[in-house]
Length: 352
Ligand SMILES: *Cc1c(COP(=O)(O)O)cnc(C)c1O
Image 1 (spheres, protein in one colour):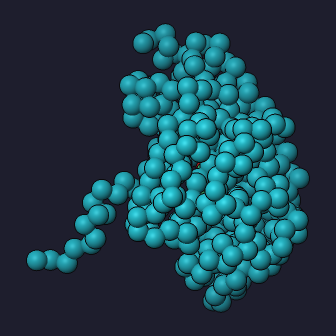
Image 2 (tube, rainbow, N blue to C red):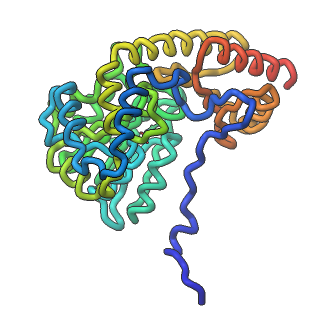
């Protein structure tokens, strides 16, 4: 018999990346449309001189910068090769076979994948009727086997966000030995002041962690860098399961240069948020049901029509991300690209 991998991997879904189609506008991966700032490009170019050297394995400078920015001890920070890698590390750091990882569904597609790779069990709690986390149902789904709960806020792919009061009520109900991981990949696009900043709970509670990334608001998706902030003993374990050197030197340098240019980058996010609200309003005007979104994308719960809608926008040279049988996620870009998408969405309504 030829060599075979673990049989349980047969049922492991593969991560589906947003499609890129030459000649079409890509609104399928929640990237920001602006390229790296000149200052960040320069820092990357300068750092390329030292590519014969290994990166700093402990990512010390960047971790110290982040600790200072967040007002947390550096022991509570772990930098990773994108926050997707950190999702996997935190599950590996917390769970053994048979342990349960709880999350909403639909939510970020990495959660079930990293859970299964670790040999743990996914427990999915359906979103409520407004496509938002049903935190009461999630609290009720916690069992003695639950080790970890992911709360993606705002939620990918629906864009909806839980507010402070409901999140605090939920956190009060979670047993102290269960870690709540707030995945805040889109936090920089939030405009509603009632949506919490998870770092406040890292400071005030013993079982809350936050994941953030440089891929979205900071425009470094191609370089792979994100961070974990949470209880020191968990941050330590997350660092233990880190693949050595996986945060490369260019990523470390570019992340620091991006923190230097933070104001300019966050101003871009504000522009995206204004466009997001415009696109949502125009879709609603055109007759679409679009949940309130606090991220850099909108969600169209089209059910069985999701794939057909995506084919239609593709025929109009706009690539969106369809989730078969469920809905379509569309990333917000520049005004003109958003208009091309809106044009395609309107023409779909008039033809279907
Ligand atoms: C995009 C995204 C991430 C992370 O991305 P990285 O590029 O791996 O840092 C994490 N969580 C959610 C919910 C995301 O949408």
